[in-house]
Image (cartoon, rainbow over all chains, first blue to last red; front, side, top):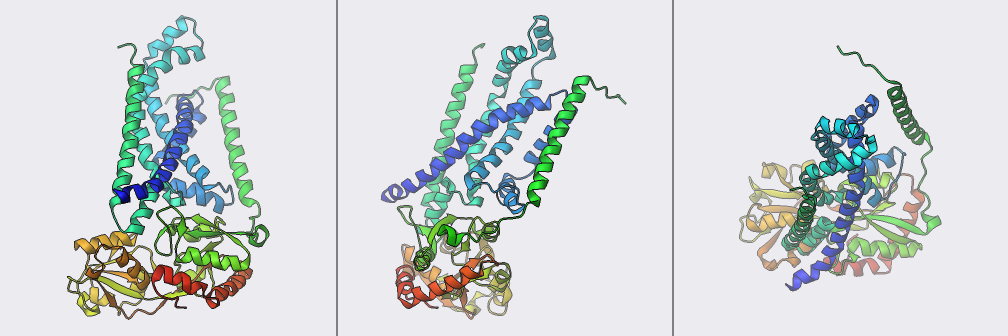
Length: 214
Length: 277
């Protein structure tokens, strides 16, 4: 017990970093995902093709590789030298936006064509149709899948170890290597579990709040 | 085949997207052509960025209060103090150390960095500041008492370490006796766990690390250290090939901390014996 209390402060320090990456990634990736999903359904062929290429690259290569490329690759090719945290954040946002975009595309496709026609007959503009008819329904459809990705993000954030950012997993590694013990990992697992349980509860809450027609 | 009919709006949209793509590619191309900046600013800024892996006990790690300590960290502080530079410790992933150095994210690698012929081709080394020897760490209850007992036994080493390289480069010392493929671990604490539960018969490890790890265990007397015939390993500080001036000044500083007893004091603190150079 004494030992747990002794290593807890350093683990909490790591947890702060994990939560920081998690929160900021969501904040960036969700809006970007919506934009990319709209691009996927655009009338402009070149834009559609470009968005499909972006999603293929982001979903088709490991996130770890993408972090290494953005951080080391860009500075070695002399394009941009990003600080560690920013490099990790840019990569996470780009990667997760691709997954979110595909989820949102599915949500948009779930809305029958007739609703667009109906809205047109009612004299709604394109923007009004999106804002008042389509998006409120899409949000409900996509929520469970988004929740899945959000929980994945909590655990994927540990990949930042490769550019030396001190997140929760690294804090556990340090304590485990120093004290030659598995107890720190146990505590790290518990902290991740607590975080995902909290996130799950939050997602459930949002889903019930959105369930106003049932 | 359906013929693609483009409306005026679509032509415009496609044109704008194409323009954006061309602009982005053009900017990136222009950026790569720009002259790369050199990292000779250490003396100007009075700080130097030291790359360390903070999971690498006892050379560089964090104590229970989260402060960065260790033999290399303390020695680097002492040496750079002699040079009038302020060290800034940057945590890195060990597998990326040479890339970090080359891209200028760090200025020196100083973390139990063994001098090997291969590494000498990639980085500039200071003079060696510490020497160590590889040993086999085994359990007393096991049957391994000397090298020749290792026939067909399970051996653990650290991935990408100089000990693994040494093991492969000099097969007559141990490899030809073991015959089986070695098990690789990303850190020694995991290898030691496997040694204790019996998944491994021995771990190939530097003597100083072995002493540190055994001291941390609940029953240190359960372990046995078996000597090997591997040549000594030398630890050096890695720098960029272009930083010759830094190398000269650092060598001088290392001599000073060795002469004034500082190096010995730090070695006693972490290894339990004075520094062997």
